[in-house]
Image (cartoon, rainbow, N blue to C red):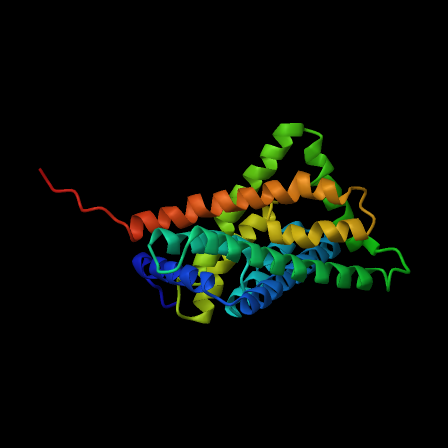
Length: 270
């Protein structure tokens, strides 16, 4: 595992943020669509494994395969650009403005949602034999998860909404560590090892990831979950997106940038 020191990989994070802000609309949408689709397939895979084995930990151990694939292919998740693009602005990179960052976030959101919903519809078709049969154990599990993580939060009002927000923060703290993991090594095996650990942690802990949820909840509605699109937006997606933004940026992006790029002088011995 060829390891880069923190000052090297944090500089790569800033470079990556600048590159993503200046990327064309077409490339941004394509890369975001593919990222959303691959992560959605990984979520479907992990839930299938968990249901068939009865051991959720096995699903969590295997889920990072999708995250590793999409980052090795150079695709983008909203949770990743939440962390990287603001660093390019803080570093004063030419042409990186608040407006251009928001444009990038919006395009990646649209692309991720398009990929996730496409896989949601395709998997629902597969689970139900073209919407002619019962969705089976895996489909039923996805439907119940959707209910529990929307109406289950709504039952507690403001405390429930705050819980989703905090779970979103904790999630992208870990997910963005996975994004950093893709830059921490120059070998494929090193990148995969560094990405795998935090992604497994977030999935097993049941933290809220806005892109995984773009697959999970529309799938739940399609396969008979008794909650509405507004339930999904208000009692999951919106607070999850906000939590992902704050958690990834505050706990990973800003801390690494502040202490490894904008360092202060060493203390002078008295």
